[in-house]
Length: 326
Image (cartoon, rainbow, N blue to C red; front, side, top):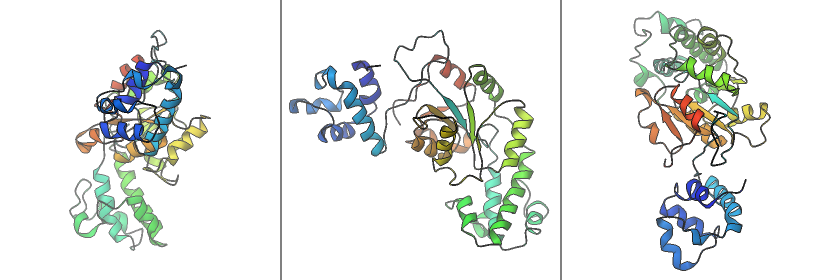
């Protein structure tokens, strides 16, 4: 479908600030009379583009923006079949979810425990769980030693584990999994979880998972709170490289046979890793905001933020659209 000028302005011009517009025009991606350069900071005047070059130029600008870290806000056609897709938006072909903090309430205390206990990675794997769960210095929700003994917060936990020599690496994996196994018993589903998943199922929307958890907590959550619901593929920690690399999301897109990669997908998560992975894969990104991720709503890779999962139902019914400015 050919783009109209209104669509062009909506998708390409408005999201760009003056510097980006000037760069695009300066690099020759759009034909323009030089007397109109000053207008670029306010809008994309219709006289700058002839009808014959709207489509081709918009593709060039999209490519330019992707290569320079920006893109137009994504939108998808309404899932309600009775609503008219007046903008000619593409069809949504699937949604990928994170797990901890997204399908269930955040259990961020786990990461403090992990960082602390990884400083003891050279100890026997039989001793590590005792340190975590029996020693009085390591109660489940309190870990005073992270800053003193553990790896710093700036260090990625999985990267740190894989950097360890054997047998320390296996012992560290065992310790981290012990923390996750204990925490999974306390999983609490996010508000609106069943409403959203049931809605997506009723609309025939494919659902996948991409998480940095290992498989046991994921299985526990699905069997406990979403019995009978289908998520496929399920990408867990065993898949490498993990988020924030987009490889897991692109793997799901490939498994679904999508020729455009993740361009027609939505990634829903609660962390910067989710937003970065989704954006770099080409998917729309939705942040489930909470007190644990304050400020992430304004991240350049966050396409849209919601407070509850079932807020997505109305958005998808009427036609999903990311916010215009990041």
